[in-house]
Length: 613
Image 1 (cartoon, rainbow, N blue to C red):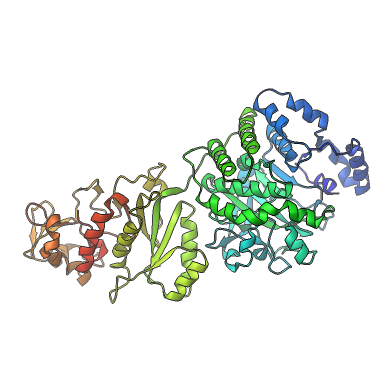
Image 2 (cartoon, one colour; image 1 turned 90 degrees about the horizontal axis):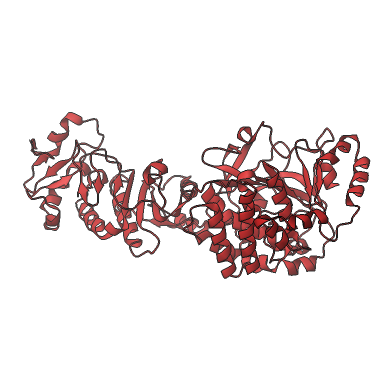
């Protein structure tokens, strides 16, 4: 029935990969079933390729890694599907719908199978409309509650058991958006359709909770976009893979079938985030009428899921490789997974043959768009008294983690807010250096100093990038298109100066402050009795005559601790006015920056005036 329904879909071809136990007269039975289903299905058999056992054995004799891969794929195992994937890729598929014979596509009001792809001439014109963008801080995402599961406290097969009671893994809706299948930055890699009836849950769920169960469907149901930093298991029962994600379809063969597709999903997601690929869960267009299973047999086969899934996600979250392309990165990952006991050595050989077989049939791997792991991002939140503060911090963290591995939110957070961040797996720090002054004038400097000192001895972090919560960063421009993030220079948004390897370039508004109380232009061609006089021709700067911009520079210049910063004429260089929304400081300058920051905080100098040499 599942096959008959599928053949009612236009523009799809069906590849059937039988195993040794598949009846020889399978196609005859299928034809008879087609005739029973009605006129609309009878023309569908010409879209079926029955990849017979004999044909599969012929493929084993093909030369190169292609034949070696087919020959190495074991019989009597779920991973025989891998040969079907390779067949589809070889024949130019743009999408692969990976499903089982007990998953039936639902029928529409017209009695025909519902479409499983949106309208569009090609992948560039296709989009999912009104997708719920999930927001959460946790590293695992339980999509069942989000999708309206009719059974309370439900979870998908493969979701870490040690997190099923954690409500913070369920997330919330940040907003709704149309999601294109292809764009210049992010693309859909996988769409997992949920199933009504007897859906894909583990044996513990089946034994302990009632069935059937359903999910939200109809006009009001929404797909959900999984955050790039979070992991969520998807299966091989009703899943669409787009062309740029074909490389991630390989099913490992040295684990039970009940584990194989879940391991595949986690392995692929580890690289999805660095390849700009999304995982989406969509409302049920499927009804699962599950083939007969022994629950206790499933329970035994799923042991790896119960005992290893949580540790696997934590391992993948921290995993990295120096490889800068998907084939090498995938091979590195599977080698490391073998060394940590998640697969056996045969799967390492298999992934090597798979990658070479894909290249042999002409598959083009998408480029990597890697997250930076050598830089920590510090988000400065000046205010923490809004009702939306917690959600604002969660969403800012989530978006920033699309580009950076280590993200810290800092602000004048309350104890209850800090507890909420901890519960939601958000790294946050509460600090307020502003005291009675207006928010954000001194805290950024103190917080940046603290972050640099905190990461000074890190073996992974080479610098701290500070940005305000409302700053929009051009990551390509900042990184100069390089990977890893370049850490040879200090960067900031001041329009008048630039510091490179300790050298300050001259700028229009830079000036000198002297211990005797007067000021001079950077070129020493003009002298002023006060900053008020120096800035009087440029009163458009909001902060020009505020005490926090004009009161501390002379005190700093007079402070004995500033001797090491004085020029040969006894002055201290200041950059004048600027913005304090962004700054990057390499870790190698941590001690020097901390010392200078302490001096500026001591004399309450506004951060926008606080960047001397």
